Length: 239
Image (cartoon, rainbow, N blue to C red; front, side):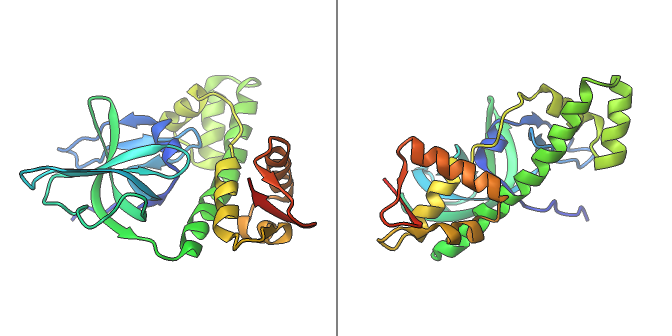
């Protein structure tokens, strides 16, 4: 029996901006995406909002589009109408395998469930952000070294130090170097936590589980651009 790949908690944008590799059915190797943060993902666990739904008339095909604030992706089912009970605007968790057809990366449906507790959504997003911070340090380390050593030496370093194989390394080097944009996730967390009077800044540092300098920088940028304001000293509210 083939062992099922773990469902990786991930942002949709990282899937859509990653590089897709086709699997091999005869060798029982699944298709997968390698992200610019060095993750190799064949089965995903995402959380987002249902923004579109299609139910086939014959009852054999249906799809939903899920948006997590970073990007959107379609989830497809070719067996019955598993999405019939879900409504637009509902927050859901989706688990499934990554597939590709005509240039579109999509998720083959396995599980889709409603998320009723806002804390579950916040926890999911902070876990993903925390992971990305750690992965970015690794990727930046590899990129920094790339200008100082030969390719073979870089490959050896990446493999021995971080377990990054040559295929993943090539994706990392192809990707454009850019900072993670934490703003959408931070804004969403503030909106979810706000019960009407804003959110205490010290609570954000506790909940976001990110380095203090990252939180400070993101909050300052959001305040300067007018996305956040201080209704009272020590608290923030989304405009």
